[in-house]
Image (tube, rainbow, N blue to C red):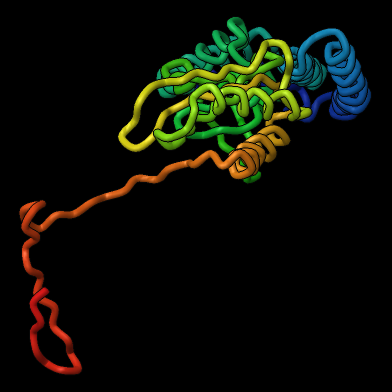
Length: 291
C-alpha cells in the first residue's frame, strides 16, 4: 500500500533536478511571509475575543487560526515545490484512517473535547474539582484539559475522563456560601449562641449582608448541641473569609463564656456501686497494693 501511495505522479519536480531554484524560492517566500502574518492574525483574534468573549473562546480561536492557517501554508508551500496536492491529500486520508483505527482512545478524547467546548461546564480560569484534584483551569484542548493545582503542579486530565466523572465547578457563580459545623455544651442557651453567631457575621467585612447568614440548630449530638453556621461571600474573598471567620468564632465564644465541648469517655471496670479493685505494682517496692 505504501509503495502504491509513493507514485511518480506526485513526486515534485525538484526531486528530478528540474526547476530547483524557482520552486524553492516560491515556497520560501510563502513560508517566511505567511507565518508572521498568520501569527499576527491569530494574536489579534485572541485579543479581540478576550475582550468580548470568554478566555476559553479566545484560546480556541487562537488555536484554530494557528493550526488551520499552518495547514494551508504548508499545503501551499508543497504545491509550490511541485507536489500534487490532490494525490497527497488522498494518501494522507488513507494514512489518517489507519492511524484513527490505532488511536481509538485519542478519538474518544477528541469527541469528548468537542462536547466540553459545546456544553461549557467550566471555562479557563475556573476552579474545578475532579477525581480528587482541585485547581485552576489553564487550558481546554480537544484531547485533554490542564489544571494548575494550588501547590503549583500541573495535572493533565483526558477529556474522556472529564465526561465520565463528576466535575465540581467551584467558581461558577459569583457568590458562594461557607458552611461551618460547630457544637456547644448542653448547658448553653441556644438563643444566645444564635445571636452571637449572627453578630460575628455582621462584623466580618467579608460576609455578605444579602443573602443573609444562615444559622441552624441541627439537633442533639453525643456530647454537644450542634449548629450549622453558613455565611455568603464573593468568590474572590474565600481565603480572606476563611482565615478570619473561624478565629472570630473562637474568640467571641471565649468572651461570652460559651463552651465548645470535646468527647469524654468514662471507663468502668466493674459494678458502678462496687468498684472492682485494681492492682497497681510499684516497681521500687516490688509489691502489689490493692486499691
